[in-house]
Image (tube, rainbow, N blue to C red; front, side, top):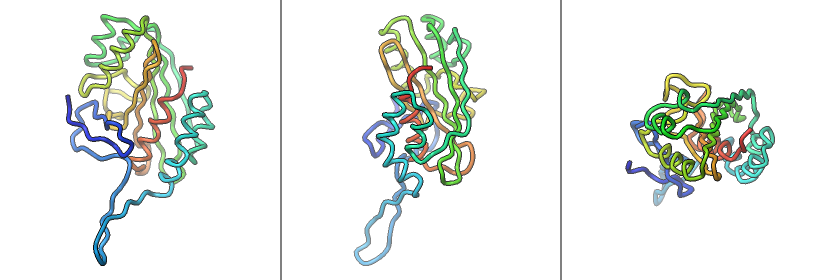
Length: 209
């Protein structure tokens, strides 16, 4: 078990692949000098807009309205690629791959999306939907992928494992026999940690294709 910090929303910040320095996601706290001292919390305007629109964006995502979900954040989808596999073993690594050898999945859908955050940055978002034969197996899989250093499904758009998606901006969701895994990473520019975390919070809500 890794001693992980909590983000500003109270959720654990996950570091799946043994990422080095721990970064507090969500806000940038800047010290201010003046009479009496004190601190001020500042977010760039794009990240602030995205945080305000996250609730409605997640609702759109739950309904499968992909473009609308990103637009509610003030973002724009640039590219979307999807692929379906029938075998999870060859498309996973670490303990997760060994799990699939013992408990084969029913199917695997993967998606890679590139979005523009409206502040000169682009973000790569990868989502995997893993369907297992039984609800119990899906629960076991989610508990495994949520642990640090256990491997993962090989997300669409990266090779070798961990070369692009490091596990720092990560979320997962369990829906009966389905496990949804989402990660985000900068594609260009310097998106904030709050922006990267918002991307996975929304993406993990998308239903399977």
